[in-house]
Image (tube, rainbow, N blue to C red; front, top):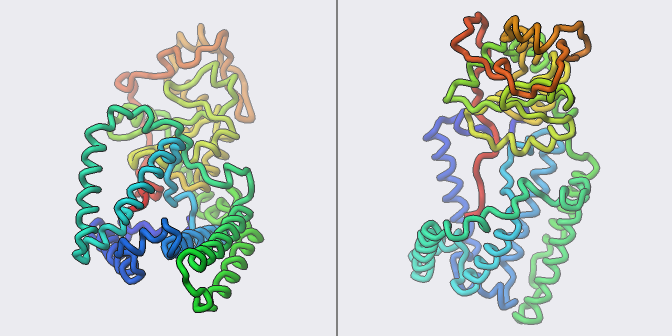
Length: 411
């Protein structure tokens, strides 16, 4: 696994991690104040095209962070799967952005800069913060009236590479050039509308722009790691787990966690659809090989107590799916030992084996039973009563500390 982002709670403990968050918050506020962002006049001038400091500072932060994130990802220093990306709710996002923009123009602050102004005892900042709190209260009391719209047009973790179906490196270069063009346009507005003398602007900004462009090109040249690249970084450790049977769980253990209310179990059946339709474990989701990659962002958002179990007829396909999910940093992934074949062998009674399914020789991860009709999960064997069976097995499931995107957003 890539070393970053760091699991601060694991490294420093609950309160230790909060101290780090507090220090980062103080540092961020101090930088905003030193940049003049605690002054509502300076911020409001942005919308009258007199001073474009807000655009230049914030967009610089965005593109520097973007280039840094994707360069670190390309070099294998950062696991992008563990970075929080706000999910897209298209129309609510547009409406919310317009409302925030109007509030920014009228009040002269955004939520973050208002807190900076309030911290320095500026009256307009204090009143703006009070208005924010009142708005939060009002939203909480009325959201039920428009909750359908609030959750509409959900697109998940949707980013520009998905929108344009283009390599990440191309998008990074494009965004950098777009930002540089905006910076140039902002300076022209400051000169024409604000009457500023742009000749006094620091010359080093040209070198900085060139450095950003060069770094963006480097991101494109190196490229983002594939699932195969990420697997190669962890293969030595993880292949040992496979060889020592540390991640293959007995059907009895799977049955136990299915009935454990403290565990959120997600079963992924990666067999062909025809085999899945013949018989599958109750609540197991059929997932095609192509669908598995699309599910990864959703799997990362599952709660901390989630255990993922992949299964095939035997273990061949399930093992490949396990490797892929591990490479994508999905935590707590296990393989059903012996697959669905062993599940049936463990929980089927004589009546099932004589009238419902007939054992047949199988190989190459094929279904070891011949069914007269497609049962799906419509048989007690698909959901056995755990109190009927007394099974001995070594318990292997251990919940890892979750390293996935769990929260985020702009203050």
